[in-house]
Image 1 (tube, one colour):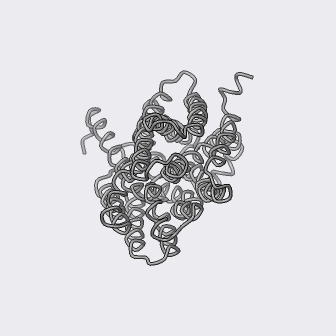
Image 2: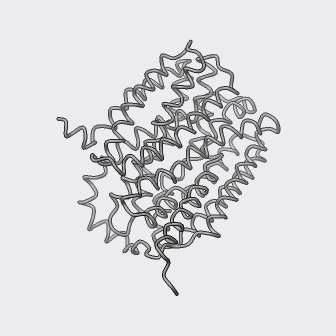
Image 3: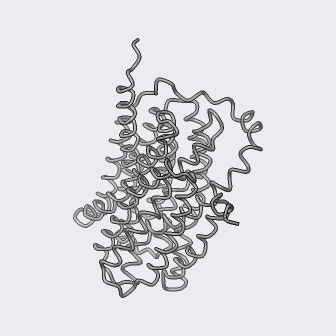
Length: 400
């Protein structure tokens, strides 16, 4: 069989990246777009803020363990099989959830959907790591990871319109169709690269050998991950409700501002990741800048009630760009910290740690709002936690 020319190989890389990004967009369309449906679910079932947060937690719960398992499976089986099966499970679960009569049933089927969703994040990350060299990996990771806020942004734009006209059940059906179509497209069209990543050896022996090497690297990955993902998901779940309650901004405008934040988040994932490829200080510097920018944006947002809508929109775009965009350089950093032949497992492990925070933070944030009568104290708590993201950053240690 003749070898591919360099031009053909380059074209194949970008085609694969497009497939992986589309799979991320479809898988995230409703799973990450639930915040835009929060007001509709709240009205339909008489929910308080903490119960609204439980919907996001249910959709994100199994990845705590599932990301690690998915990473192991991805190191052993074809990505197209694992991602395609996961997308099908997401679609089937959302379709059943759309027919549920009780909120508890919806939470259960969102939990089941989260099992399938476990394959999409590490699956796409491993695909990019296999097809792209380190010099372009940050940009490619950023493009692929832009699928998450882009899918959520499309969800924030489209799902409320569907729910307004046809009801929240139709919005869940739309999410099922998006997940199924994009996942099957990936499964049918994806092919392995000519020089795939080396097969991973058995996990126990690998991790016994590399534990000493990994342990010092984990704080550099974990601390920014868990801190920044807290901000990201509180914006995703609660921005429209906070804009309604604290700012007096109608829900239909609030979900458009959420779309704006997530759209700029998609741009941020690409832009910050591309910068991390070229930064002479490495990928840690864009992460440090993102933390400082999010701190400033949250401080402005806390003080923003009474400001005109255009000013709130600017703050939302700023928070979106950095509050979602940090993930691009971070996920590239994770792949580069992986032991040889264990990229899938390392991605799953890092994402699983983040996922614990994703599950716990939204209902805790909502419970704090229910206890105090305002979202302000939740945002203040996130603001005070942000410096933790810098504790293990080599850029900050170099300044000491």
